[in-house]
Length: 151
Image 1 (tube, helix red, strand yellow):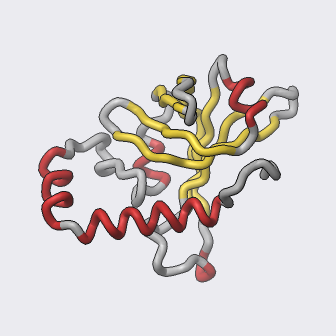
Image 2 (cartoon, one colour; image 1 turned 45 degrees about the vertical axis):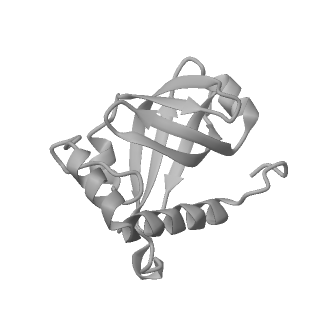
């Protein structure tokens, strides 16, 4: 992780979990969100905070938008999804049953790889958006893919 980043992945995830708990505690907001949601895949409805690898795998090949804090948008395709089995060591209070690694690739990956690990607003039509930490992962040919870890 870059030394320029002032927020760790663990801290970022903790903030997202706290935000989800706050939203879940508001009955009116929760009811509105539930009434406007539509199923995104045959596996189940996709939710950035709770969905696992099976729900995200249904969207392989789909285009996702990565927006940085300056408003610059990069569009990339979801090319890989991997479940992270933490076993008995997984904290029970995490919102999803398994961790998920999502891998994205596209013709405009180089600027994101050069920027290093940072937070982006990631979205796809019909799936909503989430602020996630994304970072480059090198390939053998010297290029990079962008990876996010959802805990």
